Image (tube, rainbow, N blue to C red; front, top):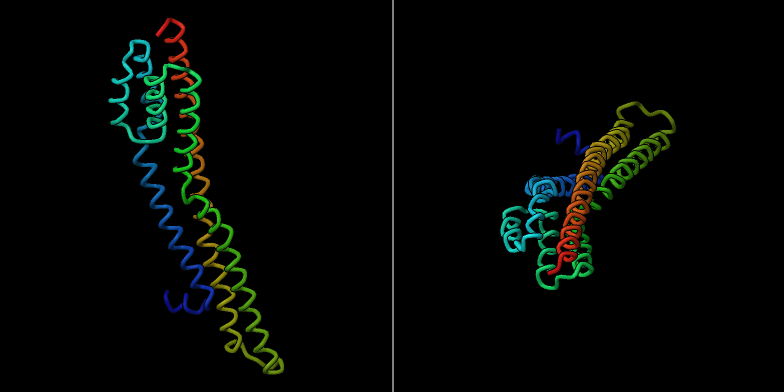
Length: 208
């Protein structure tokens, strides 16, 4: 296998680097989403009822046991409520914290998207350089060239194309997979935030 890959020429090096970066990002994001899988709006929504009973501290203690952007966002909102008792301030903190948490989830995902676009282009470039080498051989031998003399350029053309696509396809698949997870987390975050705001509004309507 290494012998075959070595025939792909110098452009196999950046393709290999892309594959290593891709693997690192996939492992990192997979671990992150596995770690936060239980920290959803469904798992903490029922806790918000305690706001009406002035049990914000109790909710915060429960949320500490749940990692993830949704619990962290709700915790920030509850802290804002306990500090200021004002709905508009809670909304502001929820928006700011939610944006920051989503940004953390998206960390390095742009790299996957870049790899998905760059890797096939590197493969295409390898195809072009490989065919150039093949045609140079044809020109140098005045057309009287056998297949063995063309093999080097053809090998480079085919291997770099295959390698570029091999790196790009999983990169694109995982990018869309992770973005789908982020979209679901964002929806859960919005639902939990609305539940918290509604609880604060109801609590305030009955007097602090």
